Image (cartoon, rainbow over all chains, first blue to last red):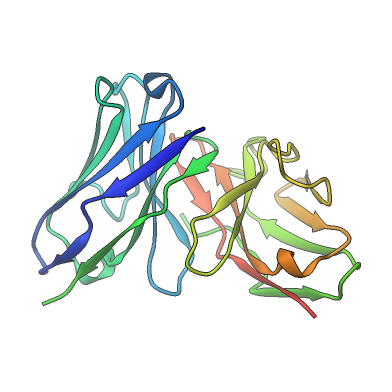
Length: 116
Length: 110
C-alpha cells in the first residue's frame, strides 16, 4: 500500500524558513517523480514543484521560484521542500503526491502558517 | 498561467447525472492527454478519480467517467449518491514540466 506522510509544517514569521518532509513507502520511490501541491485556506489546489525520480530535474511554479527548493533522498524514500523568504501568501496545507502528470496518491498534508 | 476554468458549483438529485466542465487552452488541456480529476472531502486530501483524460484507477466506481473535446475536459458522475458530495478539481499537464489545476467545483447532492 502506497503511503505518503508529510511533516515539518508549523508557524513561521514572514521572511523565515521551513523544511517540509514527505516519507514514502509501499512503492519503488526512486522510480517515480514526486510533486508538492498546496492549498491555501478555503482555496483551490496549486501546483508548487516537481522532481524527477533520479533527482535530476526540478521544476517550480513562478510563485515560488528562487525561494523554494525541492529535493529527494532516494536512500531514505523521502521528499523534501526547503522553503525560504516565506510570505503570508505561502500559508497553506502542503501535500506531497506521487507522480508528475498525475498525483496518483497523496499524503494527508502539513499546514504551514506564515504570520507575525 | 491562469487556472483552468471550472464552474464553482454543480448539483443534482440522487440517481441523476451531473457533468462538470474544465476549460483550458490549446497549451494545456487541448495539447496533452494528461487531464486528471480529483475528489476532495472537507479536511481531507484529494483523491485521484480519473487520469489521462478518461482512465479510472482501481477502486473508483464506474459511475465516474470523463472525456475531452478540444480545450475542454468533462467529468460525469452518473447515478448520483450522497457520498459523491465533495469538491472536484481537474488538472492538466502544461508542458514545461508543470501542472495546472482548475479552481474547483463544489458538487451538491440535493
